[in-house]
Image 1 (cartoon, rainbow, N blue to C red):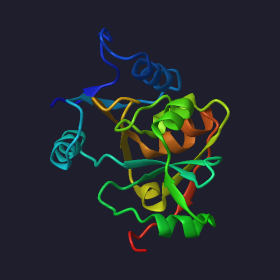
Image 2: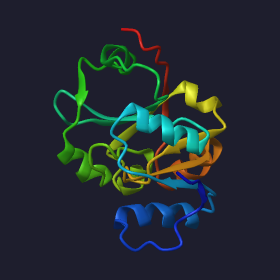
Image 3: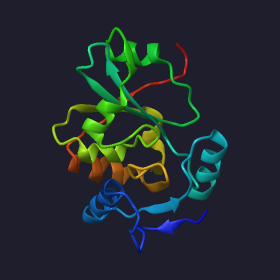
Image 4: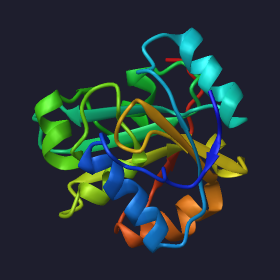
Length: 181
């Protein structure tokens, strides 16, 4: 794997949603690094990507309430266990579950395996609430997919929080996750 600065010189063969991600970051003046890779389907492969980026890729989960009327994108450190009960309690929701791929595509234009905070640029009506583990605030860099799981990005966390998220009209709710129920 190779780490590149910015978008690919040639975008032929790349999906429109990936190109839109690069367009949005460029339009906002957010510098980023990128690596291309096979679809990351094992933890071993994710560790290779982390090593190339120099920072771990975040775990991103698309969740909903029981009625499927409220949707959440949770981003957290990749090595931290996720306990539904812990997050449900902090949000005051009786039960959280994983939202269906249909909702994911409707609101974020993302398919399973490619869930990313970058998908919030597609959530025009702000139907999805962003939840971020508070441990991410202190990290210098943030890594995620550009709405497709065959590339990964590295950008400054401050740029994500102070430029990207306000530009796509999403404010993170910081949660305290320990990985314990």
